[in-house]
Length: 286
Ligand code: HMG
Ligand code: MG
Image (tube, rainbow, N blue to C red; front, side):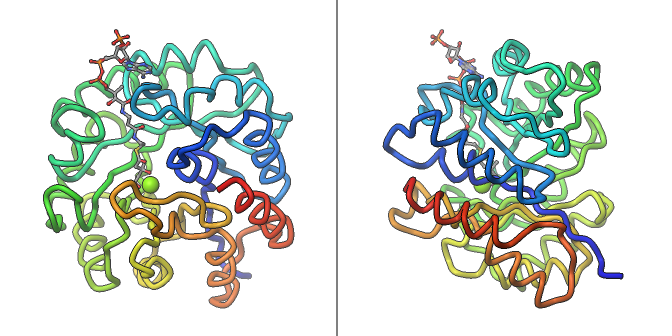
């Protein structure tokens, strides 16, 4: 039997958050509803962050309220602090499965620019969010950004990523998604980073999150598969961009990852024809 690889669809959040024009709630909901029929089990639908920092995600509560029931799907949202947690609580719909995604950086420069605080401060700020989510029996996921390169600090040492992973998992033993935020990683450097992180986190708890800015995302997924990772994040239609590289490709495209996994003989439970339709819809939103 083919081995299973889990894909986390991040297009509606990581992809759309970069789009400068206001995208109507109905369009976001139509995309997520379609994705929810594809066999995907995890879809990130928004974030409860400051609307001044990321205006495109300011409607996450309205998106959540309008989604069609999808009993087999877990909807993930990013929560950076207790203000975001309170907003999530006010917006959640009874009976829906949610995942709370918390995020830190492996580099100090990105932490300051993305979260307005140091890595240590960001972890301290997340501790009560994690505690609250656990009290509600919600699934947690931790993101670590800049796992190979930081737009402010340059290359990230693999040990710094392992340190960040250990810090986050000291709060709670959550699965982690390792983000090549600016898509500069190469297979060799990704492998070195993964080997360092695997010293402190079991590989079954790791996902790869590759942006395709440098055109290396699929090669990086290949090497991560070789090292035993069986979960990846991707965005339908390759949604997303990079604020530091105008016009650059966004997150690795879900349809391209599906093709790669199919070629390598992995099973995902995802219907590529539905993803192709969603990709077309997503491209129309850029
Ligand atoms: P801050 O300004 O330091 O926060 O922002 P503060 O606590 O000093 O509060 C300032 C104001 O923001 C206050 O309002 C708060 O109420 C408000 P005021 O009194 O001025 O009117 N505020 C909030 N409003 C709504 N929701 C909240 C919230 N918190 C405070 N949760 C903060 C700190 C974290 C909020 C800010 O830095 C922020 O929102 N950053 C956004 C970060 C973000 O969403 N980045 C993109 C996602 S991460 C990513 O894409 C990487 C990833 O894909 C993996 C990878 O690729 O590497 C995950
Ligand atoms: Mg990302």
